[in-house]
Length: 115
Image 1 (cartoon, rainbow, N blue to C red):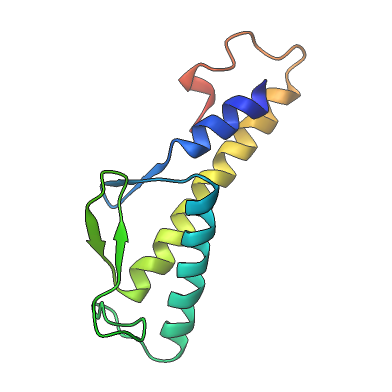
Image 2 (image 1 turned 30 degrees about the vertical axis):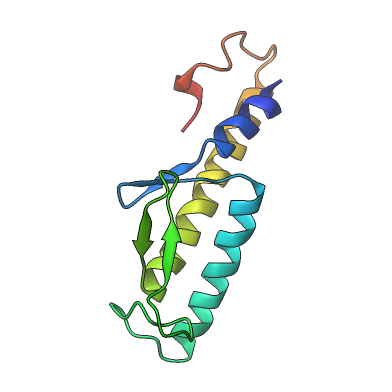
């Protein structure tokens, strides 16, 4: 029951730099992969503010939950990945804290228990 609530809240997505993004299992993998590529690009010399860091000729863009395109430089993509991971971790630890109650509160779905 707590895990289900946790998973539902994680899958509801997250907001980064004022934009809401999907965070289902496919999005998680894509964000993680993009953050790794961005980090490698930074190590190879990608500069802040340069959106053409991904080896292509077009700026790197991410599709937000509302289907808009958001241009990001490599540094922003790394921060995007970090924000996504931190958001998921916060929910995992919130669920853990709820499971430590004996008994688990009946209102465990209340927003007050969750980040």
